[in-house]
Length: 318
View 1 (spheres, rainbow, N blue to C red):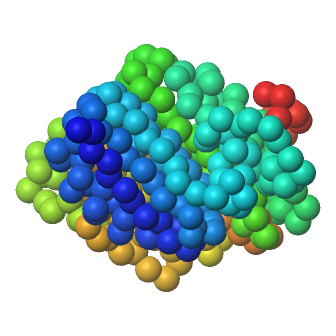
View 2 (cartoon, rainbow, N blue to C red):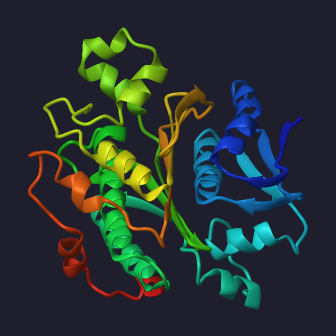
View 3 (cartoon, one colour):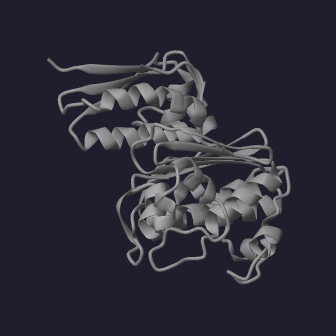
């Protein structure tokens, strides 16, 4: 007889709350067989972060590979269901005024199979963020730079695509704007940050994964086998601090939370790859100029340089 695994998701859910739910999911996945299914009960859920949307789709793809199916349990009138339809994380069906309104503040979740797909998406996404009133130019430039770095990390280090631009599995991207915030989630189903670093350098193999994950956001730390600047996560972490945003990295069964006031790690339950959740305050300036010019690893650039290179695209038709 087919077995059903039911996961009840209460109230709003972001990456930290999702990690708690993932513990029970992780225990269930150990014995998951092809005839079984996972049911996410979101009847009482009122909010999903971009990272939560990405995770649900990643998990759906992961269990589909072993022949399992996933389902959502919720009322037809659920606002979270309407949000998932707006992101096209589930089949759209008939639209309505509420979904149409949501699509002004969110993008369709994308599975990018090549670097070109991801780069084109980010170009449109940056223009989309820029069009929302009150967004600072430096924060638009920071968002563009950070998204490109995170996508490059997912492909290069997550999937070991050191010379190839096509990925063996998707890079997942979701984003939305709410109040003064811009939130982006980028994920892969690759090897994870700690394995990437430990495979490259024996010194990391002697360290705890918590310490390795903390070091991953330092300047010059890279898991590339032939060397790379190791600048992407460092710039991300410094811009987040300067903007008073939040960075969360879920990888290698650990979860790192980083902001201007804290850098914490804890037990994580993500089996597959790396999921990065990033939130910036659009109304605050971001120190992108100062951070990217701290060393000699890249040419000197300014926020204006990035904005001058951008095209104005209709994101919904990209």
